[in-house]
Image 1 (cartoon, rainbow, N blue to C red):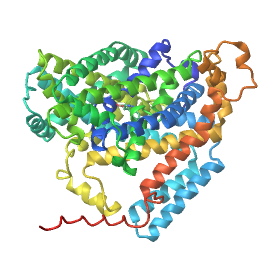
Image 2: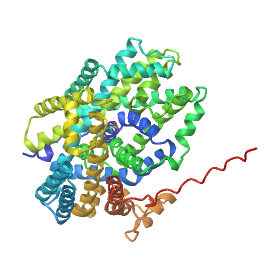
Image 3: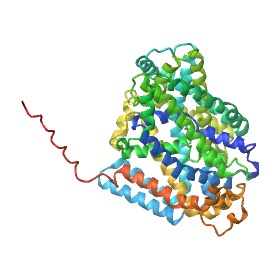
Length: 546
Ligand code: TRP
């Protein structure tokens, strides 16, 4: 049961749309996750790899998602359904590849992965591209389950800040406080519940009333607060070491694993790869400029992430703390910074409150994907879908909440998973994060770009993009740089290097190949490291004995 496009609610104007999309993109990913993975992956060089992933893969894929959404006016599954024949030769080929890999793994007695891949291959064979949309709905589930746990921590910290409990003289004390907090299920589960409740309430009210109004007011405030924090952090004694760690690239610290993490995080931070931006694009009017919207969202999102790093690393180093503290980094370091600002409790409350708002505008975009699917495709009432899936995600998230650090509360699940898949990650929380950020999102992005580039066709996509783009798509890039954009003779059809054609090449070749290489590499089928074992270090010369 599809809603006719006319009945669809739309954003009130392009600013509303940009702020809502930026609200989805800017969230815990920027302020909580980006600093801690940068810390774990060596600093400056990781930041550069991340920026490269954003420019080469993130931005082009975001254009795809907006375009698919606006063209079809549907949720992700509906969008694929509407644009594609049930199956295509490319889908068959992908299905076959996955099926064969499954059989290959079975031969090596890797039962869990073998069966999983065979099932996935068969499904792709049967349902084709629609499955990419379904994968997005599943990703919505898995991401929101751990996302809302972290958002719950934020709520907990708002309470603590109001109660004046966040006065820590040293990071070590702040760290213990945080560890004790996340290890108290009664707290973390209730905070996680509050967050899911807020998400459900907003999604329940619908796009404009719910999502748009909030984003407009509160996102700019968060931005200002970050500026205050950066200034304080940079003026702490010893801050320079942090700035150096953050901004000086040392490529020796980059491993191939960290490249995949950077790629996954580019998708995560821009809300790509699972159809959130397809869904938001579907509420976009034809007069809005897709290129300009993408540029604004990407720039804002990247800016906030870079600013968060600049607020945190100087503070980390100024206090002699290690940058690789993991998921607790922000919660452990920032309270000690607030402690050194007059009216610390006030600033801390404000900060965690705004972080909560940022998380909320992202959380609702995740729940919205799941809801829109059941409303559009299954004919559910919006209210019912929001409540039912909000509850389902709450239960999955409760499992994440009680197993952030290790498996000790969920041994039975651990046993089961280890039995089936061999080695599993450190905790249920990690498993959810890993499945979604490092697998489902990049795979989703790969399918979206292959689909737009080769099945729907860049030509039809560009026709859609042209609407509302004021000739932007056809501007000769060189004349744009030269400031001759409005000179008519510089926009003749003879010109080949236009924004549209550059985008087409990225979508057809560069993005899919980059994602594919990253994947094959993680699975271990493609290895860039030298085959020979590293040479023995030259014997250290013994100082001549006297
Ligand atoms: N981008 C958000 C953040 O950085 C998280 C998020 C919201 C998301 N919607 C998404 C991630 C869809 C992936 C897909 O916090």
